[in-house]
Image 1 (cartoon, chains in turn blue, orange):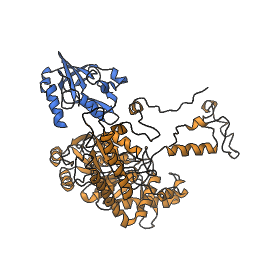
Image 2: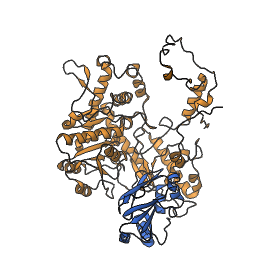
Image 3: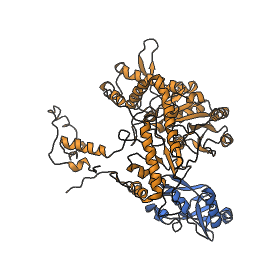
Image 4: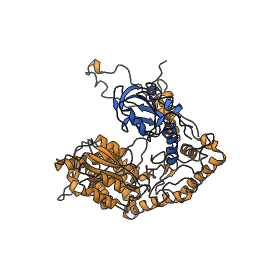
Length: 128
Length: 491
């Protein structure tokens, strides 16, 4: 069973979002890291880069495959998790504690289209 | 098995020399080279005796698993047995000892083989002409796409910058398109695992250069709607590229040219049984239909109708040059010998036997392994993990990786795992036509034993392999902190 954390928002492409005011903290879900297997590289945008909702903002590479990351919101990158550069495996050990980027949202209302924990749980059940 | 992981440098002893060279009459030939350009330190070569060298390489080879040691059902890779006579033919000094810049008059035999092989490949695939120059499958893809692009540009049609690729395609397809400067558009698969023709049609317009397809596709399924797909793409002004990775299933039975494809590549190292794996050498000849023939890359080999002599020609309209010379000739020679050896009669049996072997394994194991697409497969098929995998019990849950590792203990190479990405626990099995029923049965038995062990003793799988020289390597470490260079420790 994949872990889902209450209070976060989720996208259909398995990213999670924690909303802190106008900032969205973005990572990948436990389901995503489990499907990927051991993660060996995280490709992240630079600070001040623009990201667009549902468009690619980076990629995660594992021993099995490379997967694009899709931004759940639009805005400007406020921070990237530098720790992942040296230790991409942090996404495997705790995907919810280790965020990937923080985005200053240009349109916070976009989060309305994301799922809550219960909704994401049902979404995963349907996928199985 | 004896564990052996030494480097030959570790066997080196100062002054131990296992050979003697004749006197060198050119010993002072570098005297006039300026001092700054001469090496001051002698090369660090291993100093070993002949028995050291022989034992070193024989021990290393015993650590390896190959088609010469056992069954190798690696899906999508067509690891068929490589007849030794092919190897012998390519090693003849008349072929292996020539220089690529030698005048054509002195290498007529080699040119004849190039010319004849290109002709045979055209007959086997229904294409009009072949270049044998590309060095590998993906290099062939790039060559084919360059031809596709050159075709549109030569007609003044500059809008066509998109290439459609099914979501089940090999990763090289979108990669080759990107290298060729084309934009990739993905088309979905249906629940049956075939190209979704409605989704495809919605993506066809006058910006599409063409589509890349593998048939049978990565799931081992024949794209039955191929004629409609061809008509739709041609109607929209695009070209069809055939990825020959899975040609083994159709060899001698169905030809891409007859299906309607315009450009294609073959993997000689798969379908035509030349040794491969570990990075090469490969060969990815590219075939085209009559209307694209003038765009094939230079150099090519032409035969004079009057004299019957062969010459190397440059094609002024070529889409580009993709190799300095004439490809990996050693591989071409092996494929030539392989086709000659099979002959017209037996080449027709390759496809049917490879399909029979795959279906036999699939039907014999589908009560133990999840079969997401149950229809008749071609040369390969995909399981989506074990049916009974103890899901939900972290201490006992077994994955496809565990099954693959346990197979090594039973003396089989693991199938391709976690590809295609359409399923989470993919096990992709391709037996090829060269295996006997006894071998297939032994593999089936091992897979069934593993399925039982998964339920009764899952630790056997989770801790596998036990009987191999290396157990589970640190794959993450190998990808993130690889040691690529050997440095001798100076005392």
